[in-house]
Image 1: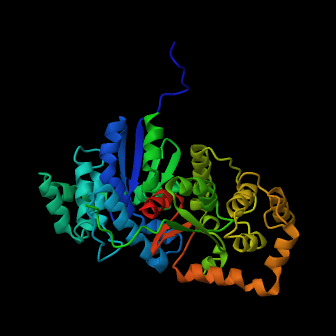
Image 2 (image 1 turned 60 degrees about the vertical axis):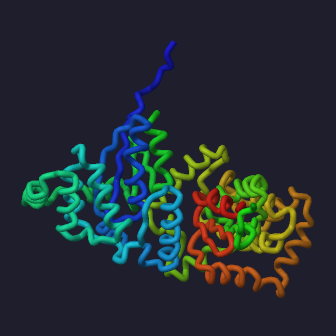
Image 3 (image 1 turned 30 degrees about the horizontal axis):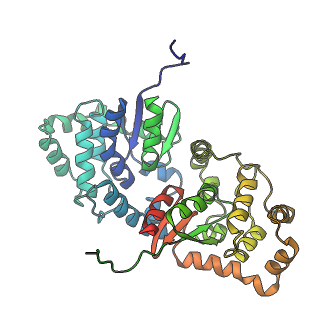
Length: 205
Length: 205
């Protein structure tokens, strides 16, 4: 006798992240492995937190606007990275605005190289304190993955493709996303790297 | 050969909480058991988040000021309570201002009944949606613990004792506390129920 289920588990997790978000860094480095172990597919959903913060009337990250929280967050990141065994260097510029890199991530969100590209940009920002806003860094990352950087950048910057990032960020807003990382399993929302395991568990079914 | 240590582990955790804070509820229900298992002593540090939020220019909790975050938080609480096996009812008034109950908790912070008193007030607020701002609820809780309610309330409300809660909340501010629950192990600060295990681990040494 098999157990009846109302519906099969979705086995899909939507991973909403911002390349400038330090807690997104932790989840980006964990996601591929955790999802694979659980037999869950990842939908990579790069977006920009900046316009969402602006919609709250904030000019930048709350980690900058609230000095007490900011001071805590960098210490928390140091400890969290030590716990996961991830390299960590506090970025000298925070939050880094990585519009081009985010356009590339959105362009490649369903490509087999997306996981490695996101990790490369995240490590540049949070492990090596590199300026991921620069086109050169994006090109470097694509070259390291043996990808046709020129063609990819041309596609991302084509007039027809430029509205895609704005539309994606508006989708994030419509979903009620207020920070990053945020995970969805169906309609169930999970905020923060601390909830990644719960989200995977739900997706696993 | 024994391993040299600069100093013995502190084996003490400072638990800063606000009786109106929903994530403090989770930690209040977990703390006694976790600390006992780890052989760690708890210093109960009740305080008021309100004046700290006011110092940031906020009129109330960010869960009220940010509707998106607020909506998420109640769903997160439902799931977290289910996970821990804790009763949960979303309070119809949030955040509840529990000045008298907090005065009692501060007064009894080193008494053997502190853990039970805090749990009683937290359960009233977050499991039964009761008005913990009322003196009657505080008296009920003290009576259930077979404590001399009249004498305790008289002591808490005595002129000489009234500045203690303000001083405690100023201490919280001076420590850089920006939310609750917050844990300290020596000078190491941990924010949020999600960091309670890490804090206990450090205190255990």
